[in-house]
Image 1 (cartoon, rainbow, N blue to C red):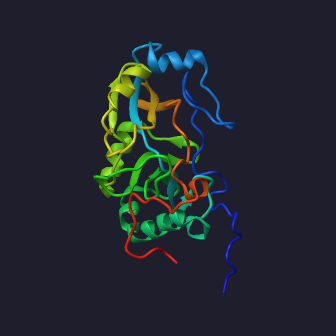
Image 2: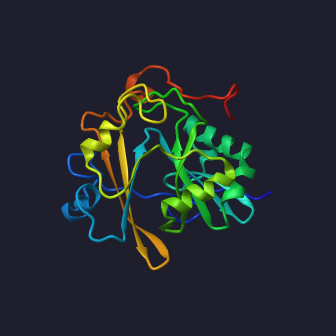
Image 3: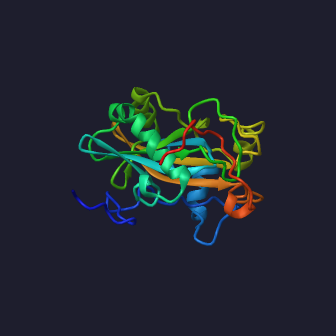
Length: 248
């Protein structure tokens, strides 16, 4: 019998997903960074030329996770790239159990070496949701450090029937205030508190190809990370979704 991998083992040899820089005025933490003013203006004011395309999506408040295809296996990972099944966190173990149940759906989307990244909304972190859909929302399809353009993401995830973040805007730049106004009333995913923020994807057409240039995000300044987590409240966990029986 082969020994189990160490708890900090990363099957991909890397993080499953990196950090996204913030737009001006966004609430940041100690490890966060802001996008340069010049790049921020592309998102919110003026693109450099007609080949640039902006997609603005609702930012969800859960746990960033990934499902990676290695051969014909699908591995459930946390954002840091570790196996979710070995996590001490119950929500991460629920993610691993959910991936195991829905493996065929992931295989319908992913080619070997690719990973589907999204928000796992089972546990309420700082926002409660009355989810109108399943607890996983896919927002990126990646191979190594490269992400697919948004139209490719939405086309590919359709094969597995996965949900994607609510589309706020697509086309030219969109200001922060305008984006947040469109998220009032709970956004697209049943938020019971004000929606956390939005994510801007800047893509560029080169001939017949489209590449993702960069991403940026805005988080409400008054947002408090993890305000509903038991380690911060001293109270029981708040679940947006939970199966009848928790994973072992």
